Structures are given as C-alpha cells and as structure tokens.
Image (cartoon, rainbow, N blue to C red):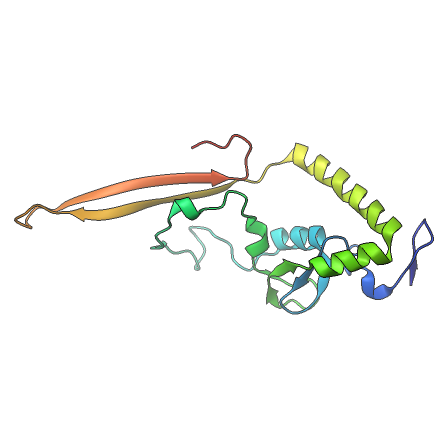
Length: 170
C-alpha cells in the first residue's frame, strides 16, 4: 500500500508500474498490463516496434487508396503505434480503460484530482514545447485512354492532408 499526502491508502494494484503513482487515464495493453496513458505514450514513442524509414527493411510503398473524406483529423496516431510492453516486452498496443479510470476516481478522489491537475500542468508545458502533426501524402492514378486504346495517358492526382496542428494547411 502506498500513502499519498492526503492520506489516501492506495493499493499496489492501483499504481502505475512506470511512475509508481496512482494510475491516471489508465490504458490496458493487449498483453493485459495496466499503465498511465502518459507513461505508455512516452514509452511507445521511445520504443516503437517499427521504424518507418527509407533505409529500414520494413519500408515499402503503399498501394492503399484512401478516401480522405473519411480521414479523421482528430485521430491519435500514438494510440495505434505498436511498441514493446514496458512490463513483458511483448509487441502490443494500448487502449483506454475508461471503466477503471472511473473506478479509481471514485475510490481515490483526492489523489485522482491531484493527478489530473499534474497531468494538465504537464500537458500545458509539453504543448508549449512541441506539436504533433500527422501528414498523409500520396497520389491517385487512373489510366486515361482514347477510343482507339493506343493512347498511353495517365491521370495522376497528388494529395496531402494533415491533422493535429492548429491552422494546419497544405
């Protein structure tokens, strides 16, 4: 059991194994470990299992045809990054666990409020230091042939879309 400054006794099971504080905005990995969303996010950005790079063997051109009208600019790329779990090193993703968050807030109202304030303060500081931008680049292709089918004409349309940045314009 851990004791907080406000004297709430916190069960060891309710502590994040990374920061050793009350789980705040908990996420559950596919290997069933629980962590703070911020802790997992920091871990994932430092240990993703794939490194998209021209020089990396896993890099390949995509033939995926996206309908950009379905693109959600609020999409959180970090939530779909696969990383090795900090607890067992299994490749995993982490999903929010809202029912656990509600239970922890009910069980430890003072400590959860304190964690919320700390998280907001840290997010404000981080927001002033950096900004995440997701950029989609690609092209669409169609063969444009004449009636005689001898014309070798193509219609290429390049597209770029971004999300996550205030005033993001391409």
